[in-house]
Length: 273
Image (cartoon, rainbow, N blue to C red; front, side, top):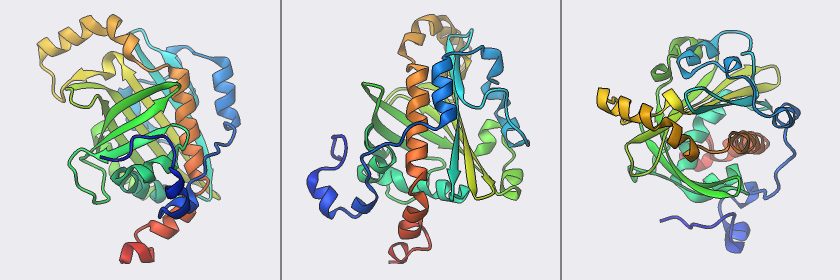
């Protein structure tokens, strides 16, 4: 099992293969995130439901791109826009397969919060769709574990042909608890190219009608989960902490992702070896 400690040990900092990319310092939040945290929770009507995820690939923006809300069904919705100069969408498509193979890679993403990542199937090939990543990280001051099961964009209603034609990438997943049939919600990171880089539009729908017991719950399971929603809401993360965490990790990695991709990506000498 991977080391269960925060950050890099001294030996990893000095001699590890990724030491040149490990930066323990997190930059200040981008302005739109700082403003959203200052505003606090907003009206849930401004945050489209998970059933509207397919409309992300249309031109323009949603009413709120960065912020959070608590929905009437006892769920939360957390959206975050991250500006990424010099980064191309395909770099993130590579990253989501590459980082899950070992903890030292995962820690690059958020050195002040990430502890461990490994694939549930035990394989180390660098793909992610159809696989589950078992992660351990801090969310705020609490240490959390989660099972991130990646799915094709079509599973969330996105037109994959149109994504490809537009040069965009959508990373989609179900969020669950390791060893449990409970699916707590959905996450989606939509990347679209802009002049000089790209932008990531992250969407997280947790709890409420985004949760389920198993992938295809029957009537009894759906009724049970609906009845438990008022109690289950206490298990959801603080939406402000989730927004801050997402904003930090995405902006932090974007700062050196082009160099990391050049060094370890599919066209690098290391990959060829």
